[in-house]
Amino acid sequence: MERLEKYYNQIKNSPVFFGMNDEELRGLLECFNARVRKYEKEEMIIRQGDMISNIYLILDGAVNIEKDSYWGRRIIISRLEKNDNLALSFVGSKDVESSVDAITVEDTLVLILGYEKCTSMCQNACVRHKVLINNLFQILSKENIELIQKIENVSQKTIRDKLMTYFSNEAQKNHSNTFTINFNRQDLADYLNVDRSAMSFELSKLQKEGYIKYDKNHFELLS
Amino acid sequence: MERLEKYYNQIKNSPVFFGMNDEELRGLLECFNARVRKYEKEEMIIRQGDMISNIYLILDGAVNIEKDSYWGRRIIISRLEKNDNLALSFVGSKDVESSVDAITVEDTLVLILGYEKCTSMCQNACVRHKVLINNLFQILSKENIELIQKIENVSQKTIRDKLMTYFSNEAQKNHSNTFTINFNRQDLADYLNVDRSAMSFELSKLQKEGYIKYDKNHFELLS
DNA sequence: ACATTTCCGTTGTTTTTACAACAAAAAGAT
DNA sequence: ATCTTTTTGTTGTAAAAACAACGGAAATGT
View (cartoon, each protein chain N blue to C red):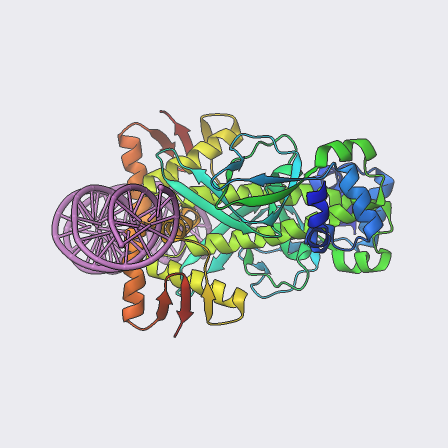
């Protein structure tokens, strides 16, 4: 519980609890039996097939949402980080089991709320819950839009187009032509759904032709 | 308004209004300034760049959610039908403009609710609104999960794998090994993100090799 | 019934990708 | 600092896809 206190400010400022005062938030955390849990690197938070009844909020670290296609190929659906939520859509869809894995990329700290328990107890009676679900709706909307953007990414025809679309989006998010990505090459390849070595090759070609400049994970868009 | 009455039962049974009694629903429809609008075939309901402040519910017909990549290639993100909602995520994300087009595939009837107007008037005060947002949360969850499934589809390596993954999902949705799809060949290709002629070729090959049987848009999974 | 348009399947060619194998570089461990 | 492990870049080859072009089928309109 002390750990929860340590992160109280961050928790309070996260989108999930937007618009709540201290009293409401503390009440909510108690009602939802909030706890902080640490996961080691490469640990699974959620497995395909799990029933999800918790709300997960990443306090620190990074998590991959992945899916293994039936022949060993790994698909990275999204990379989640500090202040992101995990598997919200499976909380909202009753009786649907998770179709994905959530795997930590590094040591990760997660806030866990027992959503089901609280909602069944207080029904929709409490005010806090109303604010919460409003926030959840907005968060889910954002996630939805990001998934659409990801579909746009992987739907490009060539590796080059996938890379440039991805880079444009990153630059836009960062409000700058330079940005640092969190993926290593293999993860980026699995995210864009291409072969790593072919992607590496295309990266150097893009650099030689003057479209981008990069050093390790720091990129600059030139065109 | 008569038209609205004509569809009242269908509206009442749609997921958006789940759990509301007649009184609540009628109040809501009035408060949200509900109206029915007919769109012709190939008409645009939403364009890329639009700000969305309405809730759209398809009463009859079919709609493509599309995006044109900068070189004429069309990406079909999803196909929506009777009782589906349109562009919900852009209602939930304030100040975000639509990144996609919504285009009717055939003559289509849509129920439109002025979401913004009502929420700003009655704040979160009214009970109906609470039930509504709860429903919206669940609908968005489902959409989210379907987007993930779509990512899985287009992330398959070969055209064959994309087709078979798509067919499996359709069979599962239909609880049967036979099913009829609503896409024509070009649309299916744009949905799976492959070349139409190459896909046609792969379809016949799959049939010759005994994995599937099809006649026009009716398919059977054999394996 | 006929003409017109749209849709679908087939084939050959060119482009792009995946894959495998390896070398270089970087990161981590002792 | 040295050794080990992981990550990244490079190349050649085989597989797959995109593309273009076309003929036939089906649907639509008159």
